[in-house]
Image (cartoon, rainbow, N blue to C red; front, side, top):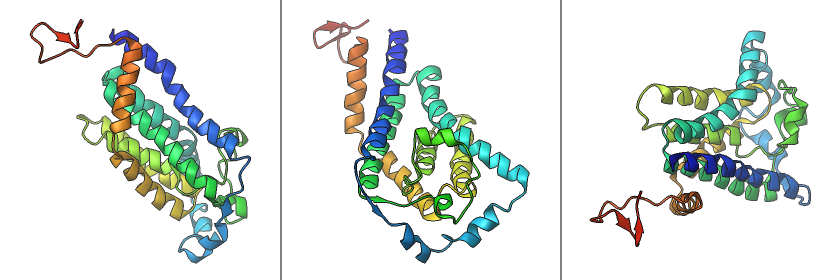
Length: 241
């Protein structure tokens, strides 16, 4: 039964990414308000700030390029995979996944009405990532809030009560990933700040729908939760196994 619960989730979880794919398609038919020019009134949203960051030694630049390109995916897949495959805490992994899906949904609503262009897109910074395939799955106007920042913070928060040292890996990523978005010229300082707040918002968001989705997935798996209050292990007329 436990094996089925894992396999079904491995098949279903990727569909959450369709939330982002739908946003990418929808964004082609709307004309949101571009607020980029207002950023000039905010401290550190200028060429001098990025010149300082991007003037760091090449070794540091390359380190943060790797962080930006690869650790974000590791943070999400590794975080959820840890609870799904290692801890087999299906409720936890389901909650984390729904948090991510809601994050895409809410951010999509924001991007529908308001966007800002990336620093490199307006000549304030250089695009140090220089990875064109990245724009297949995102856009340089999905800036406020920074989902790189929000999700790294969100995953770290989910690990804060985890025993052992593994949580410190995600704590470190929650610091390094936001910094990498700035150094790579992908985000503004205001994106990072709002991303941090957005991560806390998603973590604190009521989990009612999360529980329902968790139960729905378990229903698909054919899983029946053991009844601790029943004399013969019977729950709602069904025998627990």
